[in-house]
Structures are given as structure tokens and as C-alpha cells.
Length: 321
Image (cartoon, rainbow, N blue to C red):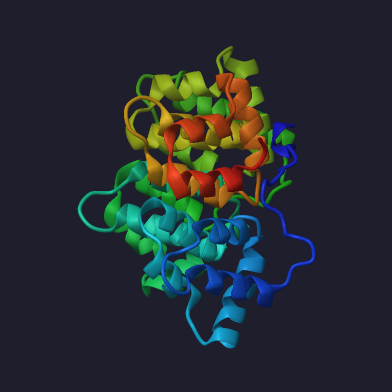
């Protein structure tokens, strides 16, 4: 099954790691007049997040300074966004992105979907716990105040951990669920949205893959075709994202990276978010998928789209010539 792709990161723990040496190298790069940005990239873009947390602690205990504050005072713009993002524990980084998507006027539903659709229950729980700790407000409550209708109900189900654990599979139930989806959409006039979001928010990814296969056998159409015909707006976007993540998460992210760089202008926030958050999970798979889909490497696309230290930091995370 495609859900069993082997995730390959581009950033792995460095061997012979010395937190004290790295902390001092970073201080040296920021001390005095001017900043050695390349030295900062060489350290922070080639260490795992766990190693960066150790460097952070060492910097504080050995040098009596706050590394993140020092980085913020020395760096700027999108380069700062990459480096400060790398310094946050992964779930806290995603919480910050969720908060940003809901803060102020309007809501960035696309970012909510991108962050929440691929998560397992275990990952969601870490995000939910961190969010409340960081913002003194439950994530569910904040989401409910910013979204509505079926889209809100779907996101709520995801964050309350309604999804069955990975590996939970029931072939007989899959046949039944495929029929329920058919009866709720193509098999009737109008659409029963609740059936769609309940099944897609509850089933394990392994289970959903079988449901989608059964759906095709039953209706002769793919689940994507059915969703497109029956749904619209944010609910359609969110359920489509879940379907893509079930079938091949790297494909989902490759498509979003391409969209972030396609046409006039660049969606830097999306570019940074995906590269930073997936670098220790499956960025190598995303790179491979990107090249296959668009006939160019992710590295060359980023080089053409970005510049300066920002470009160098992203390319260091992507890795490979």
C-alpha cells in the first residue's frame, strides 16, 4: 500500500556532534561587527532538531545568552523565518503556523488544511497540547471561532483524535463505507456531507486506502472524481488533502511546493513551512516526487525563486546538488 512509503529525511543527526562547539561557533558568527550568515547555515541547517535544542541549552548555560533572541537581532526577513523556525521543536513550530493562520482579520484555511490533514492522532495530540501551553487557549476553541459548517466539524474531528490508529484495517467495513460514500453522494440527489467527513476523519490511513479502492470498484469513479462532483469550498479542499495524504503524502507536498513557486511571485511562507517541517520526515521523498511530476529538481526551482542567505538556507535543508 502507498501509505507504507518509507519516509526519507534530508536532515539527519550529524555524527560527532558537539553542542558546546556549535554554540561557540554560533556566538562567534554573531559577535562583533557584521554577521557570518554562512556559519549559521552550516551549523543549524545540518543538525537535527533534537541537536538544535541541545545547542540552544548549551548556548544559554555556557554563554548566558538566549540563542533565539541573538539570532532574531542579527538576522532579518525570510532568512530569519527559516532559522528561527528550525530552532523551534517541530510541534511548536506547527502551532505557531496554525496560530498565525487564525490570528487577526480573516483565516488562512489553506494553511490549516495543509498542517492538519496529514497528521496521525499521535502527532495531533502533540500539537493540541503544545498549542494550549503556548497560547493559553485550546486549539479546538480557536478553530471553532474561525471556521464554520462542515469544514469546522471536520477539523474538530481531526484535532480531538477521532482517527483510528495506524494499522487499523477492516476489509468488510471498507466495503460498507464505500457504499455509504456512494449513497451519500453519487447515489442520491444532493450530498450528505456528514457521511464524507465522518468517514474521512475517522478511518486510519490504511483503512481509507482500502475504502477508496472499494469505492472505485463500486462506482467506476475515483474518490477524487466523486469529491469534485459532490463538494466545494474548504470542505472539498480539506477532504481532497486527506485523500492525497492517504495515497501519497510526498505527492501532496510536492504539489503545494510547486504551487508556492508557480507564476508571478512566491508564497514564501508556504515554501518555508513545508521545507522546515518536512526536512526531518520525508523531504527526500518530496524531492523525488517533485522531480518526477515537474521534470525539474526542487533544488533548481528554489534556486530560481529565492536569493541570498534565504536561498542558501533552504538549499542546505533540501540537500544534494
